[in-house]
Image 1 (cartoon, helix red, strand yellow):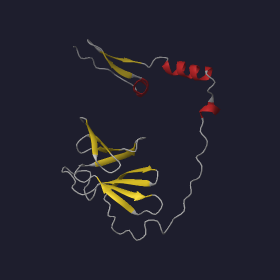
Image 2: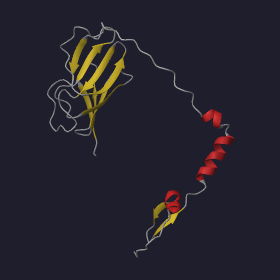
Image 3: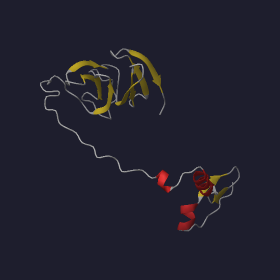
Image 4: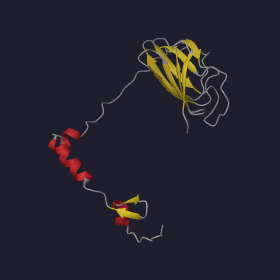
Length: 170
């Protein structure tokens, strides 16, 4: 493939995209896609007023000094995920490890709290994760946790039993 030197102006760079062909490289300007999309949206009844967003409502909170009071037994590492299911709050944390950890964390990594009192109900996930990253609760009450240390998604029962591990690759 012959090399071609291209002289580009800032205008060319901002409105062009590089396309690789089997036998040459060329610059093309974007097609009429943006104009067609705008016409389609307007034709469907979407105008500037429909597409604009209202300001978010002001959020407020009230501190409950009695929530989680007297529960000194809870020691958390870096909290990386929070999930709520009914009367339980799940806190996913790194238990003293950090993002650059490369060994399985032997301590529990999921704290289960009572939603009303903040009392520690259970601790789960010991010996399962390397670098905890995210947590969610499925409609069946199972926990879904991601681990970026070993590129996995782990499904756990509500009492912490590992049900399934999905492995990925970076």
